[in-house]
Image (tube, rainbow, N blue to C red; front, side, top):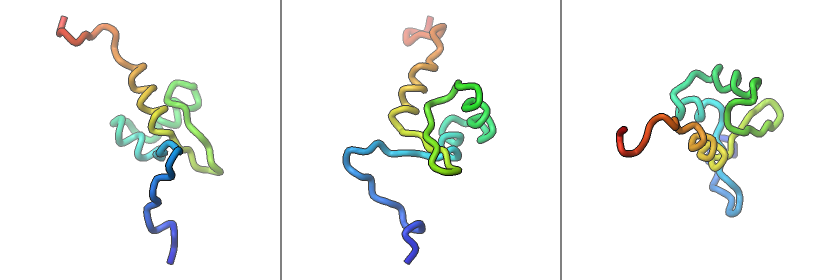
Length: 77
């Protein structure tokens, strides 16, 4: 049995991680944009594991919250 073919259960106390492809799909941008942001230190913090880059979900959520457009407001003005 190949353990890589079965999804792993979350480990209590550790943040869930997503890969570059999942992050790109979530943000609606090409994967190349994620890599471009990394080289320019613009995107969410990433973690390199060998040749793979992973992103902690709480880091992604925090980064997305920081990208909120200050010109738009909740009351529609």
